Image (cartoon, rainbow, N blue to C red; front, top):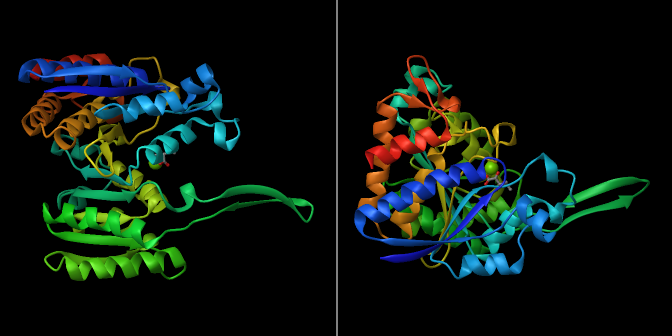
Length: 356
Ligand code: IPM
Ligand code: MG
C-alpha cells in the first residue's frame, strides 16, 4: 500500500519522539512492502513563530489531503502568555474540529513489565488494568463561547458548555461498538446530579443501552469515577464521557498504568482518516535532551496502521517489538525502576527497531 501521512512534530519533545516513530514506521513499511510518504505540517507554537497563528488554513489543508496524521506534542512556556486564540493548544483544538474528529480513544492498559511503576498498591494492580476511555472531542465546554468582560468594577469570565443529542449519540455508538469487541461493558460518566448537559447525555446513553442489549451498561458520576479509577480500575472496560471529563480522567487512567509516556491515542470521525498522538504533553523541561519516552508516539503510529490503514499485522509487530524491549529491561527516565537500564529517546528507538 502507498499512504500519505501528515506529520506534525510540534513543540518541546515533539520533534524527537516523532523522529523515532517515523523510523519505526519506515522499518514496518520496508518489512511489509508499503510506501509511506510524509508531509510536514506546522501546528502549535512553531506555527505561531512561523505564521503568527497556531493552525494556518494551508496546514489544515495538508492534513485533510493526507490519509492520516501523526502528531508529537504542542505547547510550551514560550507561548503561555499569548491570548487564548493564539495559543498552541488552540491549533490542536482547531485541527480536531477541522478534521471532524469527535471520538478520542485512549487505552489504559498495564504493561506487566511496568507494574512496579504504577502508584497503586500491588494488590489493586494485580486485579488487572485494561480499559479504554472514549472521550467526546469536539463539543462541550472546549468549543463553547469563551468570554472575559468587565462587570461591576471587576473582571468576569464565562465558558459555555453545550451538547446536542446527535453529538452524544455518535460518541455513544462508538463506545457501545468498541465494547462489543472487548469485554462488553460500558460505563458512561457524567455529572447528571448538577448539569443539564449531563442529564441529556444520560438520556441519550440510556436509549442506546436499550438498543445495544448485549452490552452491560451503567452510569457513574464523574467525582465517583475519579475515585473508582484509583480504587478498583479492574471494574472498567469502556468508559464514555464528555470532552473535559475525558481530558481529566484519561490523565488519571494513564498514570495508574505506570507512565503517561506509554499511552497512545487515536482520534477519529467519519471515515478512516485519523489523528494519532501520545496523550502526554510537550515536556519543555526535558526537550532536546534525548530523555523523552518515544513509546507513546510509536504506539500511536501502530494504532494508525491498524485503525486507519487496516494493517493489523504491521501494528502487532510494532507492539511486539515494544514488548520485547520492555522485557529486556530498557527504560526511559519516566518509567525507570531498579534493576533496569536507563536509555534515552533515540536508544529506545534503536532497540525497538532491532526487534522489528
Ligand atoms: C489532551 C490535552 C489537550 C486537551 C490540551 C493540550 C488542549 O490535554 O489532549 O488531553 O485538553 O485536550
Ligand atoms: Mg489532557
